Length: 148
Image 1: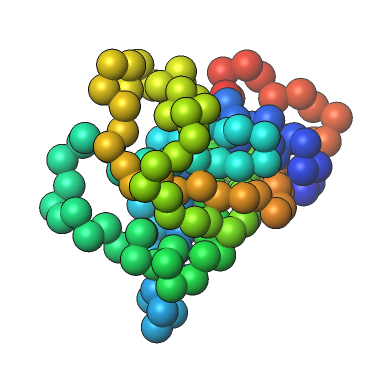
Image 2: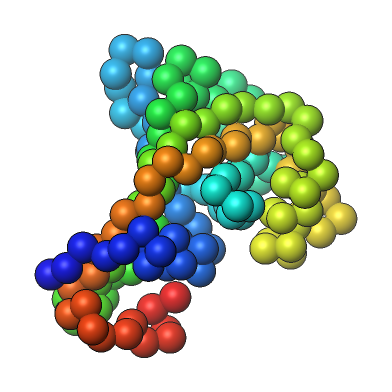
């Protein structure tokens, strides 16, 4: 069951529509949330948007302020375990209130829900330091298109 190259992991990551963002609080408590995202160069961006939230004081934002090291994970599950894979992006995050125009545009391009109603923010910009991945398929096997 081979590890995959960073290029493979990045390509798989970019094809996915949702990731799980892992942060940790100042006292070491882990926190995991699903996020929508865009990749711009070596940066993954996500934002607080207009979907209903239980509070405006989101733990992920507090955690990033206390500990900027984060991890994002995308994966595919199938009852046929020979089709399993995951891709991970590790990096350092920062919270910004007013991102560059290209950040907002990248999210709107990926998600039609943001067209005409961009995320209100704040935004989380994650500088990726490491891409990694794994797949149950042999290394010389190209994943089927429906894995994306």
